[in-house]
View 1 (cartoon, rainbow, N blue to C red):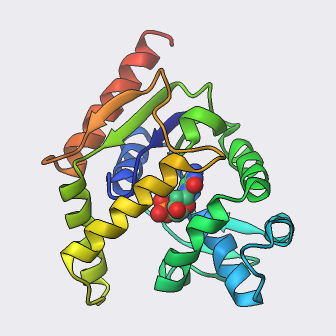
View 2: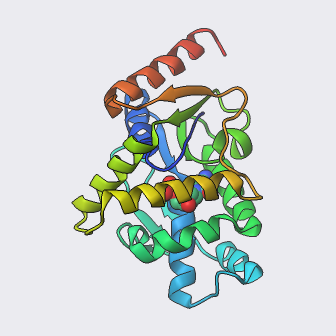
Length: 222
Ligand code: DC
């Protein structure tokens, strides 16, 4: 089990996928699970400040992920929501869903059961600290704020969204603050996590470094 955590724009998603491919592991994007719950809450009109109602919704919602490293499909109760969970509306709502302790406990259990068989790269914000404290390798992926903002800006522009780099920089800063200061499962480095800096490096280089770390741990029998 490999845990990869890090802030918005650190490159977690791309890197986790490449690591899974290099090792022949499955890939679990836990952010997609929070996004699917947020998407459904918006669709059903459940108020996000009704913590119990949103947690209850999470409990009765089935979220399926394509865990093949090449795949990225996400289904909510059997409906393909791969694109819908990346919308502006979901981006704005998901932070509040992720701050809901009831939702977190439901999704944490599901993430653990997906990881139970091993051979998996699990990516998120609290994987090394809360979800899989016994992971074989924990990586805390970082990059400078400027670089993370630039990556996120390019992603949004590629999707046809007309936003300024300055506005995206502000969004990334806000997301950092929300993730680090929330009461439940805040984003922080696990004490035994290896810090990997992806600033000015390609995802391939970073993934290769992480795959090497996994192989050397396995070779040491750890
Ligand atoms: O990585 P992402 O942008 O798809 O994550 C979506 C949201 O869910 C983001 O606000 C962070 C949050 N999240 C979380 O709190 N814990 C996780 N394990 C994964 C994501």
